[in-house]
Image (cartoon, rainbow, N blue to C red; front, side, top):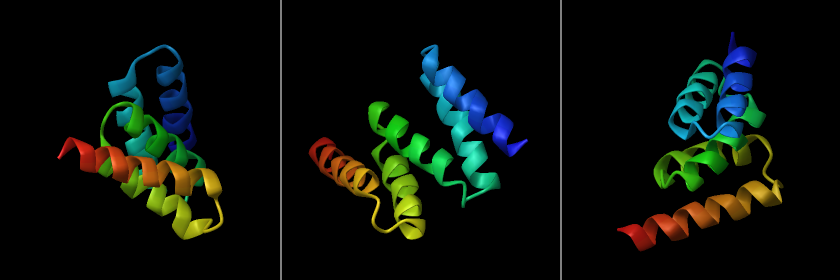
Length: 87
């Protein structure tokens, strides 16, 4: 079920259903917070959608498991920066 939600989220993203993809990726990460691939995908997609708080939370979860993940660190910094500009 978790993997299915994750895969559905990726598929929905590919076809442009951003809201649906966010919903499925969020569900996958709620069911399995340690599913780093889903956290990473959620964080990146949330940035694209302008959901900076959700992006930051997901990317911080990635960094909690993989502290040396350069891409997650850069994406989290982008979420913080863009979220601050929006405030």
